[in-house]
Image 1 (tube, rainbow, N blue to C red):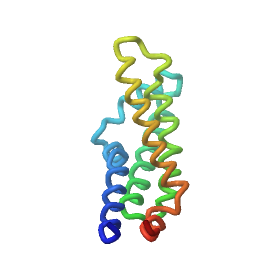
Image 2: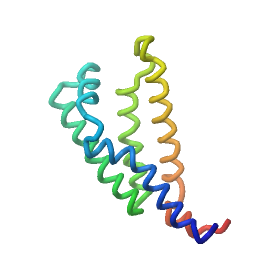
Image 3: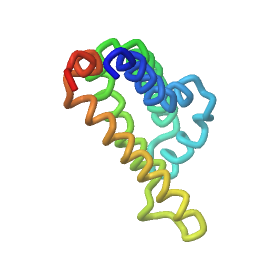
Length: 134
């Protein structure tokens, strides 16, 4: 198992980063995020800037995660992005019944991702984990 561990950690880094990179490069349209912010009272010009800042965080931290460069710092950056993004985009307490189930699933998906990122942020990083015995 020890000889495959570096490859498994690389695969884990890629899988964690994938959702952020897809969002960051615009495969998932940022227009819905901007719309959600405007609906919640954020001025449109500020919502566009926040969306752009979020995409930059997604790309920089996602690439850092894949490369294994400062994984703890990247995890913290992604958590700081994900918390407000989740509260804005998946506000399950205020959605109508037909889409409640979808929003609930997406809300807890993001909560689970935060849990995984917290595990990385609280560890010695992927490089440190690779050197542990067991």
